[in-house]
Image (cartoon, one colour):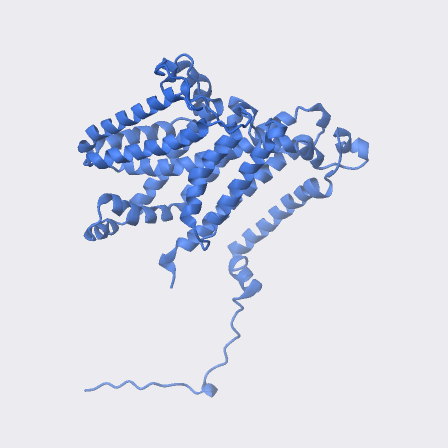
Length: 458
């Protein structure tokens, strides 16, 4: 028996009238969906309104409406002197503005710091916009050339390379300098490069590498390092400025940018090393990561600043800020390694099998298939580490390095600005600066994550 289905459409006069659909668009629809959709949402909305009412008006009253915006001394920020309630004492910030930006950097040489600020902004801005051309050239300039130029500008260059590497042992080959270059140092540098290439050729068979390629890679690394050292060894006629004269926002940005740019590649290498099949690489990476993750950053800074010089021989010394930079970078690299390792473990096994089916070797498979997906998955964790590192730069004050917060704390002791609101004004201003940088990184990471999330597009 054949069954037939007959479609039936009810005429308009037989269908009951339906109510008008709820407004799901615009501000009313958004509020109904996110603020008043249920009893719980209504209660949370009311609680949020109460918190805003309790917090925002007092802050605006202190920092804006009752604030003092002009003045030349503490008398302009005292209630009994001006006859009204006084909020934030902004003339204190204007008076200490140069120290906030430059620390104790010589006034005649501050154009060098301004040049570094301007170059960094001009090179970083094009990297943040995906549709702008010449991305590789721009990235090479920002991550490769800009740090060398910034180092020369800020320090003055013309480093005495004869005291570096093996110079403290007296092995300078009897050569002081020739044509402005420390010949003894460069002979030592070439000797160390050849020794490293030889060791690499001896060890590489144990890790499945080719001797020639390993030696070439090591020599390329030393060649790049040699060019960098050659540039910083030249005399450009700039007045030397010791790092102990740096301070304020300059030190904060130097520590944060150095830690961020170093921790990401080193963290990736450590994460890959921890998953390596070679026991030496694997356990060396594990020991490094667990050691640095198990030690507080304050301890690292104390050891790098006060303990490390006790273990250095004779005349061999390392700059105090450089020691702090190395400690912060190594500390951040260990945490970054665990974030990247989490992304690598989240990649399905089928991605590895598909890459191997295409005939890709392990290096290309990791670089072209696995690692891009892993880094995309852990963008929130990576940026969270960056934000935490940026805020942790305040810990360097403990080892007598005056960052932004350290300069402000030192400025509080100035009797010319001793008022009841100076302390709150300084800390409020520092909070605004840190919030702007951290919120900017957070919002950009969210936009980047949304742009890279192609799997949910239709």
